[in-house]
Amino acid sequence: MRLSYIIIPLLVGAGVSAWYWKHTHPDVVEVSVVEAQPGDVEETVANTRAGTVKACRRAKMSPSIGGQISELPYPEGAYVKKDAVLLKVWNDDLQAEIDLNQKSIETAKQTAKASCLQADVAQRSANRSARLRREGTISQEAYDKAITEAQVRKADCKAARDNIIVAKARLKMAKAQLKRTILYAPFNGVIAKINGELNEYVTPSPPGILTPPVIDLIEPGCFYVSVPIDEVDAPKVKRGLPARVTLDAWRGRIFEAEVSRIGSYVVDREKQARTVDIELTFKNAADLSSLLVGYSADADIILRTHHHVLRIPGEALLDDNHVLLFNPQNHKLEKREIEKGLSNWTYSEIVKGLKQGDKVVTSLGAEGVEEGALARIKGSASPKNGEASAIPEGIQSEIEADYKAESKHMKNTAGQVNAKPAIAEQENAGQENAKQTKKSQNQ
Image (cartoon, rainbow, N blue to C red; front, side):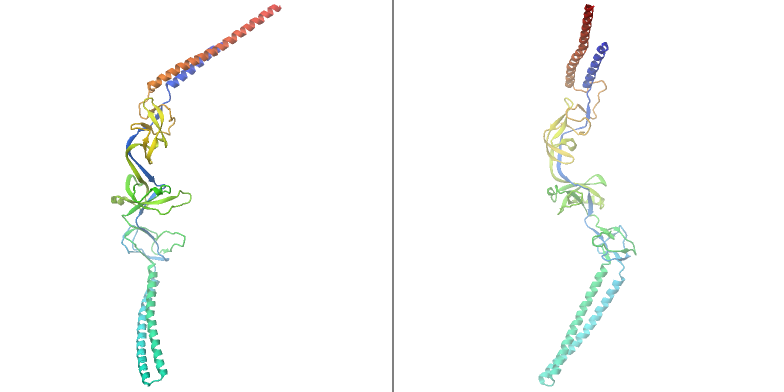
């Protein structure tokens, strides 16, 4: 029992000391802050997936009929002019058919000439028969025969001339067939890719099945960017709006562009958000020399801009209407209600709730960063162990007052705890004396 008189005060004293140490050396959260300062804020629309740099004109070509490659005049990377022959499929049979049709035309012309001469002779004979018939020197039968012969020869002449037209049509068809075996350059360009070698067999793509093109021709020096944006943002975008384009291959470099075309339909792909394709053209011609077709690209389309307004970084926002403010007077974090204006991924305009120079916390995800927490700015001098100087003077006075009140309360509690064993001991002693007295009287 006597041991409790010693242990209980010790425990109470240790508790008071621990409480005092904790409150005179509270946890100080280290935070990153940024001052609210004036600047430009833009309302932008960004692409939902990576866009692509494309050539203004690009032709992926294959011959329209199958066959064996007989000619490949240019290698990959060669610059070719419009109408240059890029590829030929074996076509000797078609060339022979053309020659045959050309000869058929010549034959048809000679046949027509002979038929028409015979028609002229028959017509003159019919004219003489008509005169003789009027004079009564020939019979009606002879006259009819002469007239009929003239009409037949005239029809033969017309048929022979029509045969010339037919022969020319056959020649034209043969040339068209021949043309299907040859690929011509539709514009001045560079051969980007050739999928085939001499004497290899190529076939056109079957319906519904895509096969690699034999020749991929790209127009050099003319590029644009195609990016998909969310269907919700599409109505905000108008032709002519400025945009900034960034490329993974050119990190840190910004390409100025503008909206040149807005897709006329919504792209609906399985398991992907519905988007609208936007095309952007580059403003600076000097930028085009650095580009290659196929670069991945991201774009920010600028809808409107507010100049020289109070702004804070986007990472400083707790939500749409609140920030954590660092109070340099008491070193505490305060939750402040704000009203936003324009915003983008980088900055938000502050219309109400902050003033220039206010320090807002940007390290919101760090442990212990919450409203009411004691904090210091990252990079400021740290107090040494045992020093309470990091706590502002006003807060230190409050802690000391709380300590005195807590100490008094704990002492009273300890006195009550110590008093209970003493009272119990006195009661036990009284009961023992009464038992002894009663025992003596009985004796």
